[in-house]
Length: 500
Image 1 (cartoon, rainbow, N blue to C red):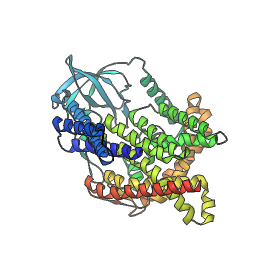
Image 2: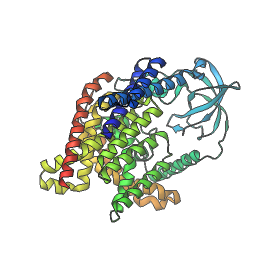
Image 3: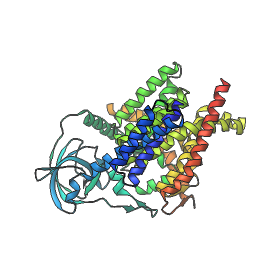
Image 4: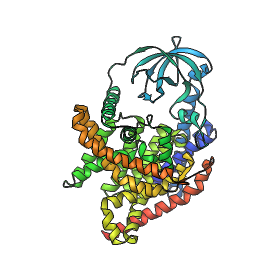
């Protein structure tokens, strides 16, 4: 029963956030929802449906109140008032700069214009040869403008303004001129980003292109160096998820450690694996996306290695609810957050059922050929694909017809690729020669992945491109899909308990 109240509360919280994002909700209505909900919760004779309604009202009220506060903070920003004017301003770099082939992108906060403090973050693009770091204080000049939606190569419009609003950014300065720079003092976050850059430099010395950019996307979430042509090929082949840092990527590091330490008790395996995941996250800079991926990876491993999927499902509900409370706009406008939650849910609920289905339906010869590890990876891949494809179709507009075979050919080798790539980069920090052997092994596997991607992308009609889809189409898709996932999860859990 406690689990039911938890899931209802998290669902109602998300509903309250969505309601406040879609339509203005007055403070009076929020207060009434909270007051009525609290009254039901503390009413002495309340039980059953009355308690459930009380939980729903309180959760909806909390979600709406938090969203209203976030929207008010965005509206209170004073930096957007200067949009359309050319200014010189000073601000501090608050995120790791993103360097591509053509530009350097930085996010500034603590901004002053003509010695007057203004509120709000600013996205600045600088020349590619400009060297800036986290924490630096920059004095830049340029014209302020509002972010604009843009059209992708597939003809879809990207809601870029709301994507940036979810990060607290409502103002841009493109092609800015750097007038002066004051280097940052030492900080823990800056030191972590410095470690990430050293690791990246180590990979640069060991791997050729485009293998290097692919490995950096997989290992440290660096996507700026990946060409648009290669990105499109990954989308068409259904493998775009491997080029972004995610819970899957981080869990691979721990998974490899689990297998190496298989002779130890499970508790030690899980503890050491968790520590390795934390170290890996720190190595990649411990940014917001990395921390979110770390949380999702820990939840997935909780389900897999402790064999307590119901605890993992509850942990996912709490983590997702907490992240939505921290940043309500992420519920609608942060695609990586949405896909991460959906993938983890599909992994927890559908993966055991898919693996059980494979055990009963596939011939014994095929099962022996695949082996337990490959079978588990394939089951996880199919489960995640089943639950994520509708959302991916909405965000990208591309349906890959060869997604499953592409994932089956590439994903089983990704743990080895990442492990040897991580070893190569780490040993290369000491001396490039030390990383040559693991780099060679990782590079062969990277070339295999690129070959699979290029081959499938070259097949005529390997993917179907759809026009702009309404987000409301996801509702009638995910309601029955979630019902199926929960039913299969419950049936598989019951079957496992009977088997024990």
